[in-house]
Picture (cartoon, helix red, strand yellow):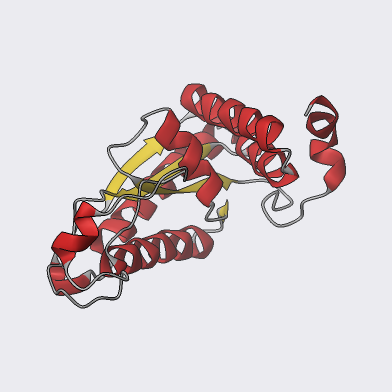
Amino acid sequence: MIHDFEKIKVDAMLNIVYQMAIAAKTAPKAKGEDSVEIAVVDNKDKDKVAKVMHEIGAITKDERWHRDAVNVEQADFILLLGIKRSDVLGANCGACGFPTCEKMLSARSKDTPFPGPFCAFKLIDLGIAAGSAAKTASILNLDNRIMFRVGVAAKQLNLINADYILGIPVSATEKNPFFDRTKELYEQHLDQS
């Protein structure tokens, strides 16, 4: 029996993305309390994410949105990781900028992509989870990059039940599209902005 590489690639990549999700879930968390939400995005919703990112780039006139949107178009899957604003450690440590968790929760940022402020410990948990997922992808030879702009688009599309979201698009190609980025790849979108 002959196994076609493209079929093998998709199955293997999805398996690795699932392992990335496990790495994020089992990553160390403050007080051992896990509040990181996890979801996997495939082709149909991935294209929606890229579309929203291009739209934001056109509105903001910020070419980085188009650059990252093209990366999402080049990806095969996206791992989404997020936290809810209501999740707090309860330490009243002040690291968020407020003297108590209660005061932090009663504050509300305006005109920002994510409705902060957030518990500093929960943001650290999210970062460690994202790093663990990216490390797993790298060990298993899957190109990836942690991107906050992907999270902004995913939030607008309600793809995951979270208030602050990071996205990790993944790809398996001969050249890593997430770090070998040239302006020519997304210039067409700059002309439309």
